[in-house]
Length: 241
Image 1: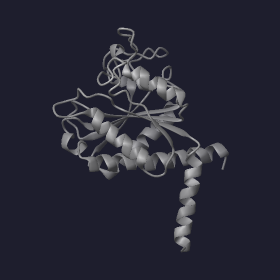
Image 2: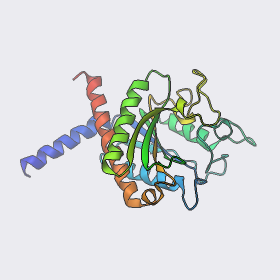
Image 3: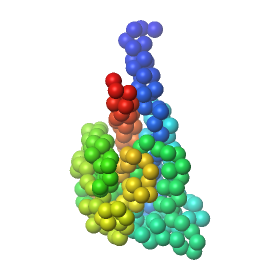
Image 4: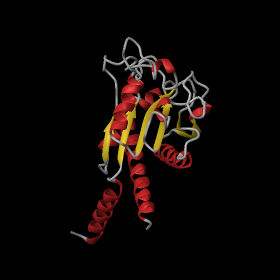
């Protein structure tokens, strides 16, 4: 074996050891009512599966309610509406509530939700983080890195990082801040310290781009590569090196 290749393998193995102690949960959108001839669930899941399959292999899990009829709004609904998240309907919890319960059982270090935007008329990527908790600054850094890398490998414009309190959508609010929030990012619901929601493309402006499976693969691999680098840096910081 040539030395450069041996060195590359050693570096890759070291990076794997550094970040594999952390659990990662992926939450692709389960929404199928998202435009004519377009399934946000299918696109988001394609990206999530591509990320999970990409190197390096981590301790990764996917939470997804699609097709689970024992939950209400398991294939539709808004992440920012009480009716679709915290409400109990006919004795059933929502698809979102099921997904977060499953995520919390894994005690993840990082939680990444993947969605597609709508109505923006922009072929772009946005990162969202939760307003007001103690990890806000670090979540902003991670979200910024992920939106930047997605934009760098695609034609998507980088629209940067936004607080979930700025969307003005629907009626779900964080019980601590009282601000409008994304249910999946609320620290009272999601126990992961690092919680990011990515809005990748627009279901109209980016439709043809998003349904292309090759593009889903490119995006998923880019997210995974940058996430692994971030995790390795976190490990280094924690060890005081």
